Image 1 (cartoon, rainbow, N blue to C red):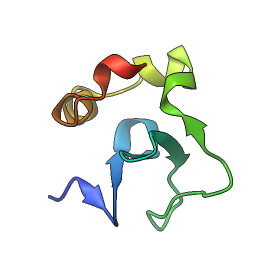
Image 2: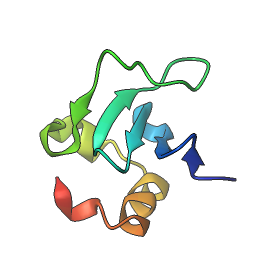
Image 3: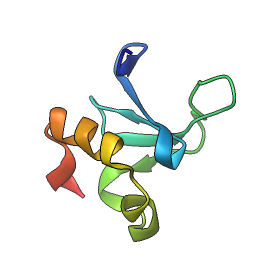
Image 4: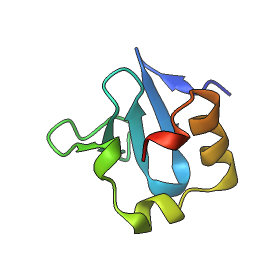
Amino acid sequence: MKDIIGPALVKLESVGSLLDIDTLEVYPCMKDDTPDWGNSTPLTEVSDEWAFSLSDEDRALLIKYDLLEIF
C-alpha cells in the first residue's frame, strides 16, 4: 500500500484525515479519498482528541516522515 496520495498527502485512516507532509496541514478526508481543501488545520494545532485517536499504524507513518514530535 502506498502511503502518499497525490503529491504529498499521507492518509491517516484512524482519524479520517490527510496530512500534507510539505505544508504540515491536516485535511478531513472525503468519502472519495480527496481532501476537504477548505477545512484544514495546521498539524501543530490539532486537538488532543485527534492525536490520541491515532492508531499505531498512523503513528508509525508520522514517525516515518519524522513528524511525530511536531505536535
